[in-house]
Every structure is written in structure tokens, then in C-alpha cells.
Image (tube, rainbow, N blue to C red; front, side, top):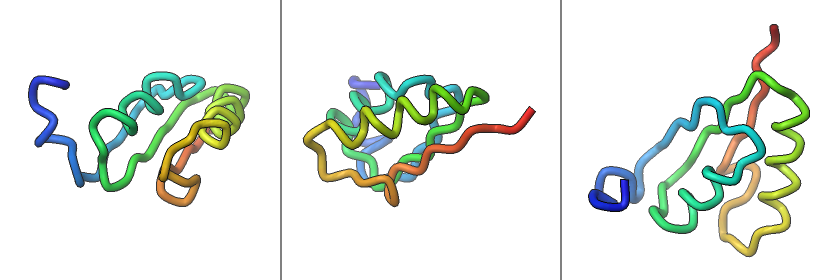
Length: 72
């Protein structure tokens, strides 16, 4: 992905299986998408991702980086 940042910069991105958001946050900081939608099946991991996003010093907010848990 880092070889082709233009594929992601200022684009809408979907992160399926975002877990606690570690990869998602690094992706946001390095590749600067316009928006990012993170999805995971585990509500606990989504809550952890939300907390991690709030802790990070990034211009992304929860309204831009939507995080959803899929209901079983």
C-alpha cells in the first residue's frame, strides 16, 4: 500500500476486520484517506478502536472514521 499511496490519498476506504484499530490508525496517518469506514464483528474491538482513535493525535474524528460492529 505504501508503494502506491495515490490509490488511497483523498479516497474513501473500507477496513473490513478493523479489530482494535491499530492498522486503521496507521493507515490514516500514513496514507491520508478522505474517509475510512472500519467494520468488525466484535463490539468490544470496535469500542477499543474508538478509544484508540480518540487517543491519537490525528485530524480524523469519529464522524470521518466510522467504526461499526456487525451483529451476529
